[in-house]
Length: 307
Image (cartoon, rainbow, N blue to C red; front, top):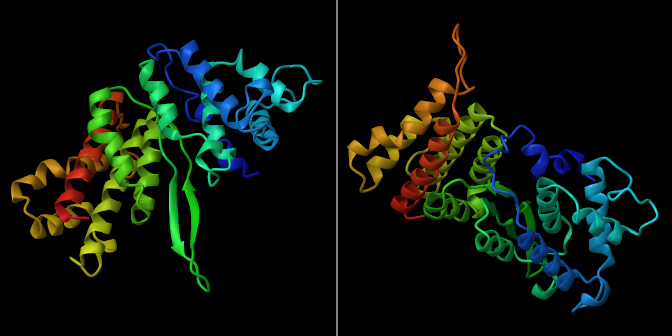
C-alpha cells in the first residue's frame, strides 16, 4: 500500500479547516451512497449483480489504516464488510467522505459499468441535497502499446472530494476547468490546480495561491508548445508567456494586465519569494479569488488558442 498516497485523503487534507460554516452531510446522501454500494458491490439480500468481497475487503483495509484502528466499529469479531458498514452508520461526515473517495480507489473501474460506481452519480447526490461538495473525475492517460494493436490506460489522478462555496462560480469556472485539464497533455497543470484546491480546504492559502499560479503558468507553456509559438517556452516566466499568447491570438493588448493578476498575487503574497521583514498573509477571500481567476483565465486562453 502506498501510504503517502493513502494519507492524502479528505480528512487529512481538511484537518485544519473551519467546520462551523460547513453544511453537514444529510442522512439521505449517506443512505443513497450506501444503497448504491449495495446494488453495485452486493451485500446481503440487496445485491443485484452478486457479492464482491474484494471491494469490501480493500475498502475496509484502507479505512482501517486511515482511522488507525484494527477494528472500525470496535467489534473485532465482525467480518470486514460488516465492520465497515457498522462504522459507516456512526462515523463523522469527514470519515464518510473518506469512504466516498475510497470507493473510487478500490473498485474495478475498468469493469462493466454496472459493476462500478459513477462519479456523476455521487455528484447528483451532492446536488440533490444541496451539499457544498464536488467529486472530481478520474484522470486517465492513454498510450498506444507497442507490439500490439491496443491502448494502455493509466490512472494518473483518482476522484477527489473538493469543497465548493459558490454554485454559480463552480459550474461556470471550476468544473469546466477541471474537465478541460482532464486531457493528458494538461496532466501537470491539472495536478497543480487540484493541489491548490486541496490547500484551500486545508486553509493553507499561501500554498493555494502558489499552486494555482503554477497551474496557469503550466497551461500557458503547453499552449505555446502545442501551437509552436515559441522555441523555449519552458524557460519563460508568466508575463513573457502571456505576451506570446496575446501576440498570436485575437485578444487585444489591454487584456495583459487583468490576465496576469494571478502571477502578480503569487509573486507579492505567496511562499514563492522571501517575505523580508514583514510576514505575508493571504486571506481566505484572496485565495478564493485566485482559484476562480485561475479557472477563468485558463478557460479563456485555451479557447483563444484553439486547443
